[in-house]
Image 1 (tube, rainbow, N blue to C red):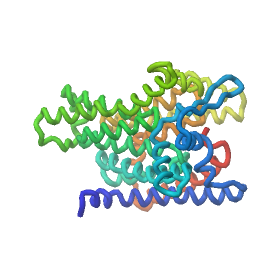
Image 2 (spheres, rainbow, N blue to C red; image 1 turned 180 degrees about the vertical axis):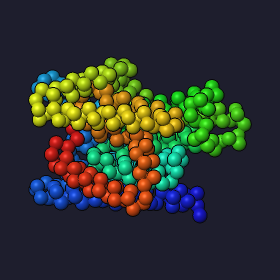
Image 3 (cartoon, helix red, strand yellow; image 1 turned 90 degrees about the vertical axis):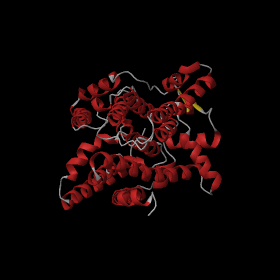
Image 4 (cartoon, rainbow, N blue to C red; image 1 turned 180 degrees about the horizontal axis):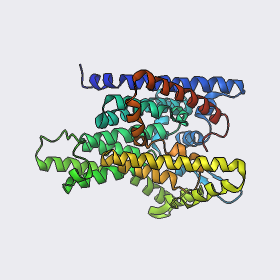
Length: 392
């Protein structure tokens, strides 16, 4: 048995379950879309952000849309790894850029599911790992995992980078973090997780930081100097992707290192500590029907915070807590695109670990019924959502 076969066999139930859930979602989407006279393929590959990615792949950077209110939507806001992969798929196959993005997303979603399983199994055991993957699959906005979007690609890179940290593969973690930083702005979360874990290991704070019980350093047999060198290499590599792209955008726009912030400002997107989101929620209470949506938003945010607190109490490793905290903060405290927040929270998969542990304690038959019921609801909601407003 090869080094790959054993981990793949352990992950097989999670991957098969994940594939079944996603297949159900796609079938329901196809039927729903056909009934409404729409194309499921178009919804998955040629709307919203998917169009911006394919334009980058086809024409490169420099495309922008000027809105009547003066806002400038520039494609420089979109990080380059997914368009690069779309261009590669188009060059080596008969696939269009859009279809290449769809294939990349489908493959990346499987890699993400495997990475989530690897992290959860490492921390909590195989059964919890399977449950964590299934819970990620049945998220209400899980259909995005099958779209030509960058969420699946980013989650795959982030999950495997975190797993590399937890198992002491520092250079590998750094390379994966580098690519995560080329995928989405939230790549900052992966870099932060690596740097906090690396600094903790350097200063000998592993035991107090919650690392000792979970990190199995493959380089433990090496001399301390060699271990430190590998760790330092990983930390140096980690930020190069995000930093390189941001600096390139600043150079291209002529606005220096902060040029990317100006690009985001053109989309009315920024970080205001959640003030704009709080006002958005508050405005829901101006009338009775919308007040129900306001209550739902408050409950949703409360659930996210509660899951994070439970993760802390359950002793999640420090890298996972840092990563999840940064992803959550960036998602909830962004000043625009309030409807995108569930999608932006999707990479914060460690939030699901408390629920995965609870599900893993149930009998297999009962947990199967729970997952099946939620999977059907998720598939129906995903089809309804994409045929309606969908991702902004």
